[in-house]
Image (cartoon, rainbow, N blue to C red; front, top):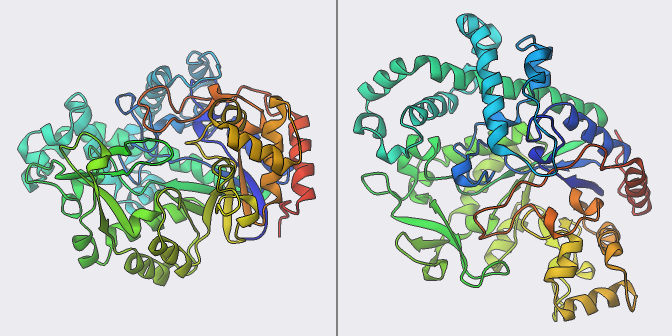
Amino acid sequence: MKRSSGVLLHFTSLPSRFGVGDLGPAAYDFADFLAEAGQRFWQVLPITPTAPDLCNSPYSGFSAYAANPLLISPELMVKYGLLEYEEIKEAVLPDRDHADFESAGRVKEKLLRTAFSRKANVLLEDPVFNKFIWDNMHWVNDFALFTAVKKHFNGESWTEWPEDIRDRSEDGLRHWGEKLFREILFVKFCQWIFFRQWGQLKDHLDEIGVELIGDVPIYVTHDSSDVWANRRIFKLDEQGQSSCVAGVPPDYFSKTGQLWGNPVYNWDVLQSEGFAWWISRMQHNLGLYHWVRLDHFRGFSAYWEIPVDAETAMEGYWVPAPGHQLFEKLSCEEGCLRIIAEDLGHITHDVTYLKDRFQLPGMNLLQFSFGEDIGYCGDALHNHRRNSVVYTGTHDNNTNRGWYSDDADEISRRNLLAYLGFNWVDESKISWELIRLLMSSVGCLCIIQAQDLLNLDGRARMNVPGQANGNWGWKLMPGQLTPLIRERLGEMTELFGRTSKID
């Protein structure tokens, strides 16, 4: 990875006339903004299907492979001839600075079902659709059936379904597959449309020299097609319930740790199968993105396992994981691994060794670096390594301005001012001062949150770890990323030798 920079902005945060951002015109406008500002990378959050009862978190999806239909662009469906302009005009919602997931889900499903009704009778005769199903049969059939059955039972978890389909008996799969045939076809149709739009956006990014960094959570949601279809690779009881769950011990974000609740992997089974499920998952994502950020990388060396009846994550314990064997197998199949290791949190020598053995760039966060140990802190600018991706903060952190005004203690503020060489600095200038420090890092890639380009306060924060509600909703308004911001970002990128050049 050559010296470069980029911006972190999830698709749902793009401006949109339909409640949440998607793969439509605003995505192309933002991609062009990045290219014109000399940025080489666009980082996004997971694109998997989300749900209101899971707080619309992109880290709590129903599938490790499928995409979120909310990200489908109605405007592009008009170009495909699947919808009329008047139909999408009637579905327009007020464009606010906060995503309206509920309304967006309602209007987009209506539009998708209208489009599906025009295509359904000939869909199985379409060679392009059939090729998509064939190429993705290792996940799309299970996901479509799972989604259709879940809708039939009003959103109930798969562990509450009738035994024949809960346990995937041959007769049960056949019965429900026939009974819910049309709904299953609709789910596949939505995935086909999404990945068609995805391919077009990816082609545009390739043309302008901007690369996508995706995000792969280490764990999957218990109520997902992955767990339902692959119970053997998770630690579950005979009824499919988790016998233990995932989380992390006490850290920067929580004094009692984080009890995520995801099922943990049965690594013995995965290893006996040559890590087939993980290899397939990573190859799928490495095909979608130019690079992949692998969330909670330390869990591949050892993970925090918590008894299912524990009240807090403090009751957990470390369990070794065969990360070396997994990545050795993956590197044999993929060659150079285009993976960024999210090595934040409780990092020990074994995690660092695993990352370095496969030459994976790790991560550094400037917001973590200004405490009492600034001289020796690995996140401090003077201790960065070249093979690193550096951030002021990620989607889990406050904005730069919000961090300085609300989160930073007196020592951190004093050290930051000393680092900048100031006795005092206006709060309104802190965000760009941190961006300037970030750009100067020796780290090969620096990523800036879009909110920080806009100098926004803590109200624009994307996520507060451990907080159930109120996350993931921040959204850009049209015109917020002005030519002045583009020019300022471009000049700073050029100054620190990070300007993107198309080879």
